[in-house]
Length: 101
Image (cartoon, rainbow, N blue to C red; front, top):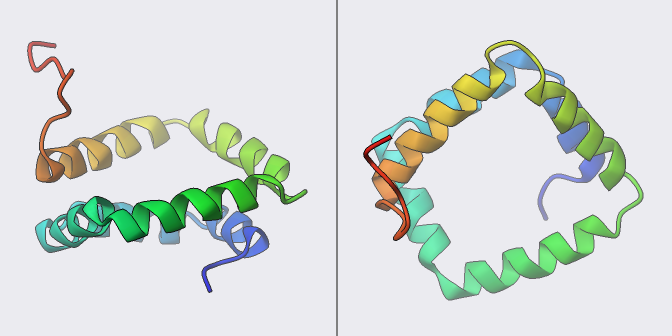
């Protein structure tokens, strides 16, 4: 069983944990494992079911608000963009990506 929304919400409040997670996402070995996991149809089905269940949780709105506040913090979006750009490079460019930007 994964983290509950309450655990996730409290984790999002800890800058050290977020920095560690971003650093981990930039590791090529982690990117390779994430790619394999995301390509697994069983994982995709499981994640879809989990997301549907999670969005019904009353705490979801609180978590959503916290995430929106984090997005307003200086430097957060740049760090996330870099982490996902690195992850995207490991996963391969999406079909509609425009590298000329």
